[in-house]
Length: 60
Figure 1: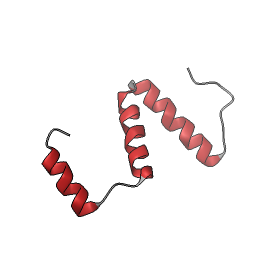
Figure 2 (figure 1 turned 120 degrees about the vertical axis):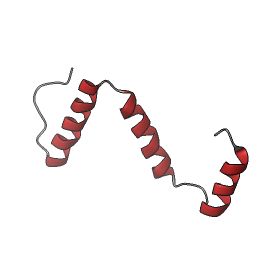
Figure 3 (figure 1 turned 90 degrees about the vertical axis):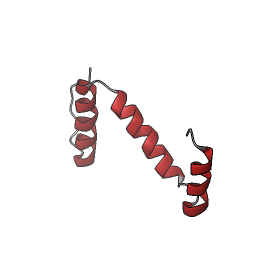
Figure 4 (figure 1 turned 45 degrees about the horizontal axis):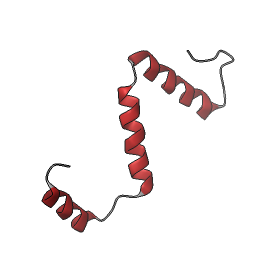
């Protein structure tokens, strides 16, 4: 963050974020860097895992 005073004020008001929050933001940033086709494949994989219908075809 460029403005350390702003970051310090936020930290004092809100406290430190939970480790799960930080990890979620890291995953979101990595997801956004993927190509659209790769994003689709990640979404499909998560959907399949959530319904336990794993495809027999490997992802590209």
